[in-house]
Length: 372
Image (cartoon, rainbow, N blue to C red):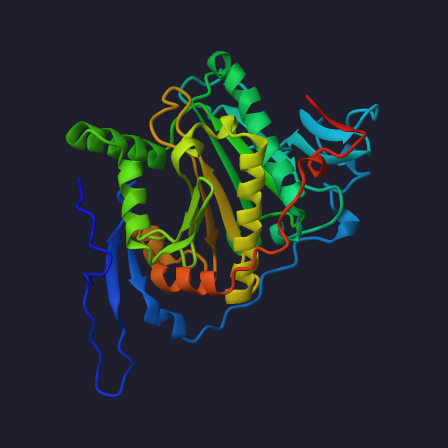
């Protein structure tokens, strides 16, 4: 098992010719997954001549817009006006099957030499109008998104044994560099009949650490981050927000449950989700103040369905200021151009939480209810 690097230690040195800028580099290991990253802050100053990302679409051809329900498969979950028909206008959030799924709902048996990836692939349409940035949603709207994730994960978990589903991934791609194909605010839920390699690594690391040290690897890692403090952005009410020691991307932040909120994500109370949504929006707006409007991925990591207590849930916001290039593809090692310590300090400096309080009544307005 790799040994965690001390937080302030430079593993790789620096070299420069006289008169040239000094490039300090450092390798760091993520103890939760075993991934290695290179921190190379000096590369942020290199000249860039990259074409701008293409415009993906406009409101005129937005299949997720209210009134365009015929452009999506039938909904499996929605928050809509009481009495309004399914797959018609009158909704605030919808979950529908992905029209272009990454997995098949059942195995193809015509050719036994091939293995079909089976599962479910959903799209969570987060608002009825044409908004394209998560930061444009209100706390109430983002809380609805989190509730929709909870409810749909619960639905899938209930049928997982008969469908052979082993793991559920919840993620959100915003912008061209983050892999989005449509700009309308949406997230995705992808359930698979296998446990992916990165999740397997988390399981292995967690089990090996518990066997050797008789305690939780996640708790040990989070205590390490909280005690160090340099990478903590916020901490209160059962949540800590940190820029991980071995961040995969510049300004990556992780929302970490502390204490009672380290229970299963689907068991979080509405008040917990409101608090999480408020911190997410605060962080997003702080990121925009710090680095501008950056494409990003949002990933909710859940343990495999057969091992729900293996480790707590965690939510990562991963900005994508640059695209994956050849070295990363060859080695599976990311090069990070902003140190997590600098990122945390910048995000703290720009944080403003003054206008993020809401009442529970705003989440499900009068005259609306959840439809499954």
